[in-house]
Picture (cartoon, helix red, strand yellow):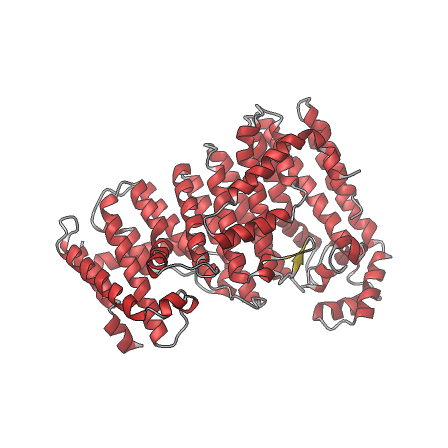
Length: 321
Length: 253
């Protein structure tokens, strides 16, 4: 089943979000317009707006008002991707040239800054201090997550705890904030906000672990980029942490992190990790977070959105690529 | 408020701003954040002129400076080959500082000011982009872009707190400082932010010089004859303007 089918009942509202995103990135600058539209057309799952909308169903739902939260979280996600592509020197994303490749790094910086600024401007329609505290905290934490990722690159001595701390900030926190903001903006009660915030956090953790597993287990075609590219960039992920000291893996891993690995050895390293218990072990950790997410859903008030949240969580944590 | 006290206040503000931006990894690889003292001086001009200035205004003034530090960090990212660790962290420094300004104002419940300032950041990025796109802009339009890039968040801040009378001086003084800095760097064959990217500037250097002289002359006259500013502050402003005098800078360069 495709992810979009799981939230097909939100289709008309997501169409509103899509139109609103196009309005939000509209600029008096020809160049920024082009760069932003380039990003919009690249598409994406729009999973963060979906979490905002579903979470808003636990309060007084109105697409006209909730779009002011759903649009900014997607803009923040888009902006961080544009800047990430500069950091990673990425040539393509989702099969299209990145902004930094099509123009240059500086234009990518301005495009990201423009999107961040528009996101903040957009959400100020919401006169709720707590919502702004949540979002601003999220933006700062996202950066700290990225900073940690750069700091931890090539560091073989890091722990599972370091990894979890990093992915919390890198991925889980924005999904958690999306859920919390949807609930806050619709006036849901505090207990519901708390459950949704935790749900988003757990789903985000589970999702990122699966993402890191897939980087190793998928083919280049499935990923749309070379398999193992995270590892090649020096990012040590959970499966790698579980097997980093295995005698058949340690020397190859060292070569990989030194950047001296041959293509044959790289394939051998990926095969060794794929065939090890590390993948299953990492899947178990992802599953543990998924179960925690599902437990949070159980505690939410009865509502049609409960089932959708549950299904999306299951889909995101069980996906094959 | 005498000259020494003015300098002391600017220094104190600068310390407070840097405190807000402290992040050990960023500091290690990207150095101390850029805090432009001229911009800071003109942001707190009403305070230096002994206007009413409470804690909320002070926090907002700091937030305005954080915005400029964020934008300055991103201006330090190279157009090509930004793969060094220090460059990667420069990208994140800008995003981090930007998040800090939002966080600071959110904690003060200044949602309407956040709206004004984030809109001003969007405007700045639009005008910076003018120096990278292929559209034809006139010299006047580009000078206006520079003024917006240099001043817009400060203008919004001053207007928000009803310090309207200070907007004109701030706008002209910061435009003047930016243009002079550009011209001097260009004439010394150093890197420039605006001129090197614009053929219009390069083919109209004499007009640019005249424009700078005109702005300076008018600004000096207006400051001297101002009923708004106290005498020490007038001296401090004129001192800043003359520190940027083209002749001085060229001689130093």
